[in-house]
Length: 421
Image 1: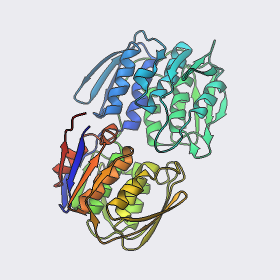
Image 2: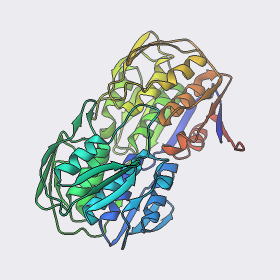
Image 3: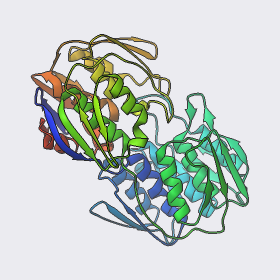
Image 4: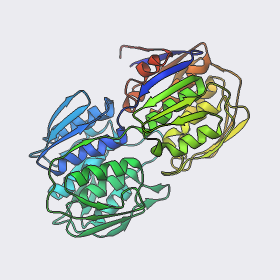
C-alpha cells in the first residue's frame, strides 16, 4: 500500500496540465455499451477508477484497447450481468445499468456497497427506470432491471440533497433508446452530465436541455459509434488552484475550462488570491495568508462538495474564522480529525466546520479516508513544517492522475513510497 511523503515549505510555480474528467469519462465509457459500433474516447485519465470501469466493460464482452489517453471500445455483443467481484471497488459501476437496460431491456449489476462519506443509495436511479416502464428488484445484493419495452415519460430525479448526477446519467442513457419522449425534471446540471449528453448526441441521440434542471430525450431506434474528447477535470483543476493558493508564487493551469469553476474561482478571489483567466488557462498568484470565508456546498453551479476538503485545508491557515457547511454529504468531514493532527483548529457542529486559522501547520503521519480528503492532506502538507506522511493513497489514485508527479513538477518536495502489502 503506497504512501506519499511531503516536505513542506517549498514554493510552487510553473505550469500544470489538467487531465480529462473522471466523472465524465466513467459514464461516457459506459455509454459505449449502447451501440455495436466502435467508439473512440480521447483524454481519458489514467486512474484506478477508469481501470476498473474498463475491466467491467471487458467482462461484459466489449473489446477494449487503451493507448496514451485514448480508449477504443467496440461492444458488438455484450452480456447483461456484472457480478460483485468486478464492481465492488467502485460505486460508479452502477452507471452500466442504464446503457444495458436501454440496449437489451435488462441488466443485473451487483450493488457496489457503501461509501465512507455517507450513504449514497440508488433509489433515484430505480425511480427513473420505473418511470421508463422497467421493473426493478434488489435480490441477493444485486440490482435487476428489466422491461418488455422502454417507454418515455416525465419524472423528477431530485432528492433530499439535490439532483443525482449518476442517476441523471443512468436514466439519460436508458432513455435514448426508449419509445417516445422522456422528460427528466430535477436533473443534475453538472458539466459532466453535459459532456455525456454531447457524446450521446454524437452517437445519434436526440437530447435537449442538458446543463439545465429539465432534460428532454426523444428516443431513437439505435445509436451508432462516435469519437469524443472528455472535458478537463474541474475538481483536479480546483485542487491545483488551492495548492497554488496555499503554497504558490505563480502557477498556471493549462487545458482547463474556467466556466466550470466559477464557484471555486469566486471563493479563491474572496480569499485574496489574484487570478488571470484566458481561453483555456488560469494563472493564480497565492502563497499569502488567505482571508476567512463562509462556504456552503451545493449542487452545480454552487460550490462543489468535491472541493470542500481542499478548502478546509486552505482555510486552516486563513487570518480569522471560517465556516464551511456541507449540504450534499453532511458526513463528509473525515479529513477534519487528520487536519487537526497537523495543528489545524477545527470544531464540528453537525454539518458545519468552524475553522480558526493558525499561523503554522506541522507535518504528521495522517490517514486518507476518501478521495478528496486525501488530496486535502497532501495540500496541507505542502505548507506544514517538517514532513507529512499520507497513508492509504490508493484513494487519491482513484481521481488524480499522477498528482505527486504534477506537484513535483511545480517545485514541491514530494515522493511516493512503495510499501509491501
